[in-house]
Length: 623
Image (cartoon, rainbow, N blue to C red; front, side, top):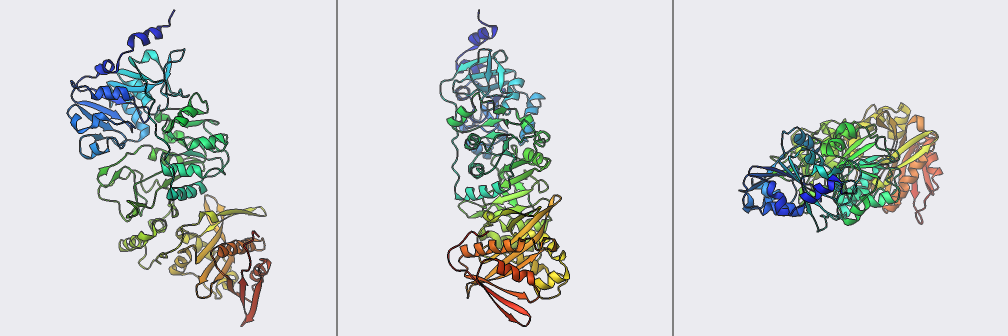
């Protein structure tokens, strides 16, 4: 005997035109998300000529959205919670609506009937032997729509993967069925370009082993994933998945082993990608597809220790305000899950949120980092929420920083063509000091590849090039010195450094000028314990070298390590050697020179050694 659900399925299976006959004048119709858009049902709906004032609601969809065409405006009006390219022009022309909402809160609109749904059009897998269909690649807000709508119509598509988690709906909870034959929609992975790969490398440098990640779709997220091959035990708790996760899961980099919430599981709400991705998630218990009211809940997100969220933006001003949904007054996308994950990551133990953007738009003619946001631009993420901003030119840390420090950090990672005008605008608005030292006009992006960690006894030191936002740390480093250390470094009994002296040390081109600082953790902040720097004299091809090591880290080999690192960098940049002036009593500094393994020439004059180190032969890895 057939089960009751089989009779229900048989008697309710109709044509697409018959299925959408349930839509009446004035109906509110929900359309399934992303690549799970039920194309036959949408086309049948748009073909209806006998309806008026039908509101079509959805987050981003990948199909053609025929209901949003100009000739359909009397019968249909789209209402997007996230604007895709298929409805962007209609929204801009006032022929469609945009409802700004946090993705985590959209399901509540349906369940509470603040936005009641008359009909939900969705795409599912065919039923299994128990009568359950799967929502497949899009559980997100679809689950709440199916459970809230008065009438549910499902396209049963055999190419829809059966995903695990909260994706299952029983046949008897669906009112009408149509049989789909065309493959579900795909959105192939966007190959990252050179700029995206640079951004991805910077983002990857901020991700620790055992971190749990949230990533979006596009070139930058794919570039981040491409740079994570050397990480260990990463996890996923992300609103969406794309093809870029597959190699990392297959290689064991992403395994969820250290996750504190849903260990050994990748939590998501939807995926958009190629057939390869759909086959990968099909009947794969590693993936848990859960609705957005759970996946995007900041309090849930925060239960993942070491949570790292990576999101994009359209513009960011010098105080850290992020515009991500509009270009001026023109709505472009939506709030989505950016704020949900930024706030969740902020509350995670060891968590971090990152805004990753290209420094320019329109083929380099516009800076995405601006003095003030464009007129009408929406602030999706407030300046108080932003932790870290990354461009292809480096990393700007904003959390806990003053507006002046934020502005300096953001200018330093803007495209070099725009740094001068950004600094001038910041000075005019008194965001930074009027005598702020300008950035070098030419140079290299922040060299993340020079970052390193080394052990000296029981202490781990993190070495990296100085950045403009290190002024505060550099000043604290100076005041930590004994009078003897100050005298040996500067040749004078200085009591303080002027703002310009501090700025000069941080305004580097990372080519002719380089400074590598050693940092140790001090609670949730860092402090500098060592600093080595060189400055090239172009006329001679030699660079002047200086060192300072905090008293408690002297005689541990820190200075020698710094010397060798700087020598290697200088060689790679074509510098002929180092010069330096060392006080006769500075035995430790002279020892660093002589222990370096380089040929050293020194001459004593007036109580000071004039030291010359010449680089000869091939670069050797002596570190």
